[in-house]
Length: 352
Picture 1 (tube, rainbow, N blue to C red):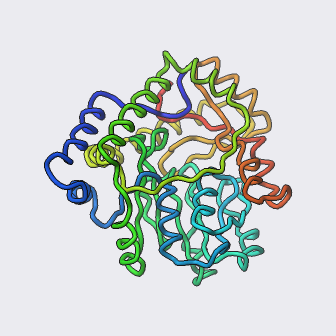
Picture 2 (picture 1 turned 90 degrees about the vertical axis):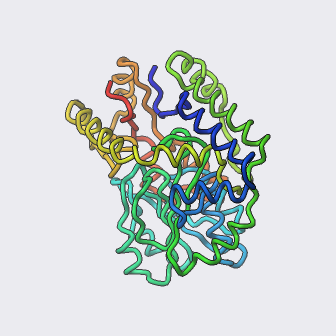
């Protein structure tokens, strides 16, 4: 079975990771990471997770406790956790059939929030310029976890290079901001802890093991373990750190490959969409991180792909149950609740 998510940690990536770790033997840890930042883009802030970028931004804004932070409810629980860990509370906004933020629902809830996280789900880009035009005093964080390298129109942008994202590198996130907020972010960023040598080694082993579990020959076992896991308590606290030097070194080497990879994925998505015999809507974002199908019978389509040896799934299908752990009430975002029954995500990293 070909996994839905692209997760790897190949020989070259392992070598780059070890090279990044070894930089600590030649210079101080802070100088080592700054050297890697200069190879990537010194204007960016390299973090251990995308959610760490969200939390760092909310801390930099010095908000009052339980300040409302808007977010699309069809989302990952890590966004909800980042908001709460920063001492704020999520304000859930509905999503359209096209997987963008529902502007009418946002207008109804605008007064409940000071900050809005706009998630570009699966690389499908929201009109942030229009949001800023309507609400110029609203601070906008663009969540580009599915949309790496997207040029932001908001005040902040957070990106992910975690395993299973695109690019799939390892635990890591990137934060960008406009000039108005840069000094405060730089101050807080300087105070963040780094990975110790022991933590770097543990991360190396974990990434390698996860890559093995997601290889086609072992993936049957991973799927079996997933089915047994059952319901999740998704509330958790995550320690914000600077990015692992091993991960930063992989990013420095692989970033140049990303535009060509995007072109390939868009071509694959178009090819799969043309060959799809289904009564539904085919949705593809600007980078084709995943292709989406909105249809009446996702189970039937899932069986078609399973017969070809390809795993498909409704990504974030438990988003409503997750949101309920953070105060969401059923019926508040009806379209998102309905979409969880009619979406299927198709991998685009493979040509099969």
